[in-house]
Length: 289
Image (cartoon, rainbow, N blue to C red; front, side):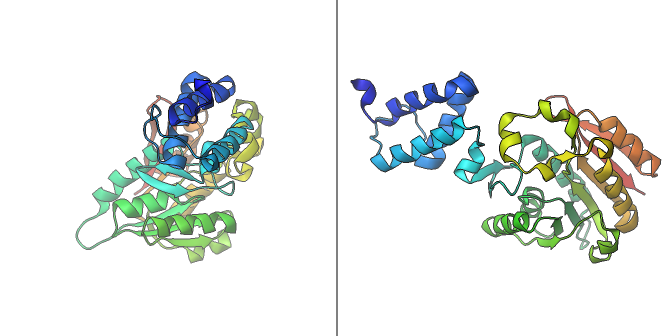
C-alpha cells in the first residue's frame, strides 16, 4: 500500500493522525513540523525523501513519549526562546512566550540605563534554564549579569546554555529566602524574576504535561504563601538596588493586583501591571527611587 511507503510525506501524515486525538489536529500539525525539522532536518512535510529505519525508530519513540504527555521540548532536549536555542530537561521549566515579553521589557529598560561607560547590573532570581540572563547578555554584551537558583542541577543547565550562546553570566547557588546570603549579591540596576507563583489550589488549571513532567518547586507555592517570592524580591531590591533601580517579575494572571499593592506598600514607585499578547496581566514592574 502507498501508505506504507516510508517517505517523509506519508510518515508525517501517519504521525499527525497518531497524535491528533490527545493534542487536536492543529497542535498535532504544529508538533509534527517541529519534530521533522529539529529531529530529522526536514523542513517540508510533503517531501518525497525516504526515511531510514533508524529515523523511523526514533520517530516511534517520540510518538510514544508524546502520547504519554511528555513535553516536546524535553523529548528533543531544547527549546526556542527569543530567537535562541536553550537546552532543557526536567530540572528546569520550559521557557515560554510570556517570559519573552518580560525579557523585551527588561531590554528596553536596560538600554535606557546604559549611559556612557556605566554598564547596568542585572540579577535574575530563580534562573532555571538561564533563558532570561543569557538572552539579556546576548542582547547587550556589556551588561554585568548575575543569576541564581536554589537547585544545582538547574544551574548546570543554565551554565551550558550560557556556553552554547557564547555569553558570560555569573551563576550563584543561593536561596533568596535566606537573607543572610544577600551579602553575596551585587548592587543592581535590574532585579528580574519568573518565580514560582501558582498556588496549589489551582492545580486543576494546569496542563497534564506540566503536572507530570515540569519541576513542581519552580511552579507551585503553598496556598497561604502565594506572594512569598514577590515579598522577598521587593525587600531585596530595597536592600541591594541602586538609585532608580527596577524590579520586574512575571506573575500569575490572577494575582497581579495583589503584587502591585504589595510593592506599593513597600514604597516602590510607578508600579504598573503589564498585559501579555493575550491581554492577560502577567508582568508587574516597579522602581526604587
